[in-house]
Image (cartoon, rainbow over the protein chains, first blue to last red):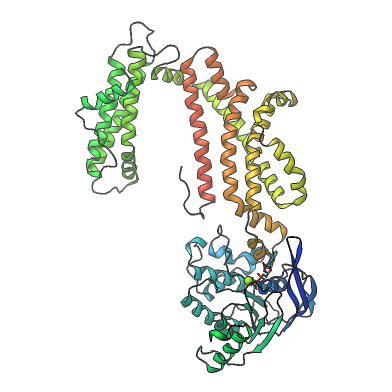
Length: 264
Length: 350
Ligand SMILES: Nc1ncnc2c1ncn2[C@@H]1O[C@H](COP(=O)(O)OP(=O)(O)O)[C@@H](O)[C@H]1O
Ligand SMILES: [Mg+2]
């Protein structure tokens, strides 16, 4: 697979630095504040692919929404390349667990969304076909979302993100709803994409193997309110092997951290 | 003798060759011939059976019989073509004939119905007059009074389309504004709740003196009748848009304008069309009332006028025109919807 070429005269897209500084966040629930993130400190260097693991409902998605700029944190600040994040920006793109394609648009028009929103469709239109080819959806340009399988829809959502040349790709359980065979295939594809494009990746997953197979670092969160429990570098070369004994050892440690070691 | 008796007697007289259900192309010839035969029979009854002696003789009986013969002749032609197009239709004409064959049961029922109608009115004078007229009376109206009917049709169409267009556009704009802006919702929602359920015709007395012309008053009433359901449904459509659609667009750099026009409006479109259909139905009702009471033109006014003169033939003729107008507009709206919402699965076909 090849990366989307950057046709601008700017330097080649490089990953973004994300600096989460003492971020706490709470929601209002039945009039009482519900603390979801508690003093989270996290620095992600350019080109890293960081996996976030933690019990369901601990606040992982919330953290991703804050990084995407969809909501401001209650306390603390988040910096992107040293500048505080004050709203969403096409350099930080999100792929959710649900593909959330617009059902009234064809696959091609869905992928074109970012370019269209920024008025770049005319000048940068050729990137749409490249992005579609990159995720293996060439030939499905005219299909409507209801005509796609779950895997294809998620690929289209990925193309919709990649066409913007993001410097930070935020993935919130992107493979969570796919069947296991498609999931394994797309894990490899995502790793290839990330390795050839050089963006920074933030990946929330509930699958420990997936985190170990893909990420350069795994962050383990406590239950709500989310605190960082462990920060484990995965110092293994790519392409990785699922049977790697080092990864198996790490898997045991993570299960322990999540309080699930008995099931080992 | 009732209509049912007539209907039961006639096919038996024709040898009982009544094809039932969706038959095979092999008996196309038979099915078309049976229909043609019944239309010839209808024409024969009309032309050869003298009108009842105790009533007026109807004009245009000959023309009506000729019309029935033409229909029968076309069916004979279809039968011959149907015989020739085995095994499979190739040209456009041939596939048109093949699809016409699906309507054969209807063509037969229509022939029986017209024959029964003819017998009960003109031939036996069994139905109270002047409320019931034979079919040739309608033909007489179309042949003699068509300029005025056409005028009325055009006037109704113009009034309806103007009012409906104004109402729909304002309805969509208001609905989006309420769904989008909290401030607009704060002010408009209570007004809508109070005034929305009121039938538009309740405004009739005020409208006719508040507006400079009865035409503009009628436009207002039709716009009001169609605008309210469009507003409410558009609003509920916009309010129900999956918030993840907005999140996606925002992270991709969408402006608020883009979020409204390219996300909220298309996502709400299925709801908007429900409102447009409801509004269209409401506007028909208001159109007729407004024309009867205010504007001195249009099919509604013609209906009123015909009733006043006890010209029941004219009334039925106008009713048929009105039905075609309304049904045509509903069909058109369905077409537009089918095109715009082609991305939806399993849509109702009209
Ligand atoms: N918009 C919201 N309003 C109130 N509570 C919320 C909202 N979004 C998330 N929460 C709550 O915050 C907690 C963390 O949610 P989330 O970040 O989605 O967890 P996860 O780690 O499973 O992704 C959950 O208890 C959830 O109920
Ligand atoms: Mg989540």
